[in-house]
Length: 136
Image (cartoon, rainbow, N blue to C red; front, side, top):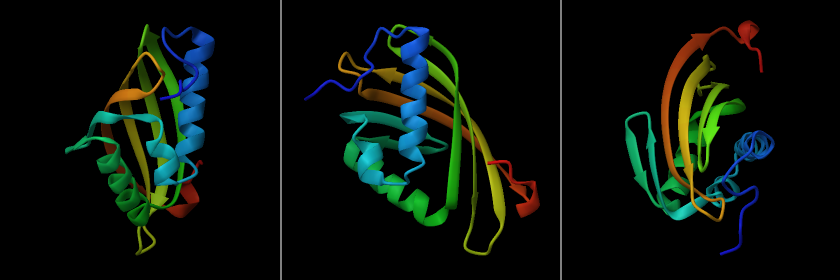
């Protein structure tokens, strides 16, 4: 497998690049493209859902973006060390009924030596908002 730059150990500059790359990829809402950033055997916890492997991640993302319409995400580096990062994020979306939400959360990331994410643990809360309260 090719290396997925930047690779660990991270510096401030490369950690910021990795977070921006993740934000850019997720904002495409393309499950195939996003899933390629993860190891074949990646481990995830997303809210109360536990996923194992890139194929489960891809299926999860397809379900997510079918439900979370007009999704827009912003990520921010919180901290990093060697091959791990902590990231805070917020995103906005609406459901089929037109109700808007802002979702807030934190992620813990762990990367392999080739720069692929092997572990992702996310805690997320959703807050209903009015469309006029959107920030993103």
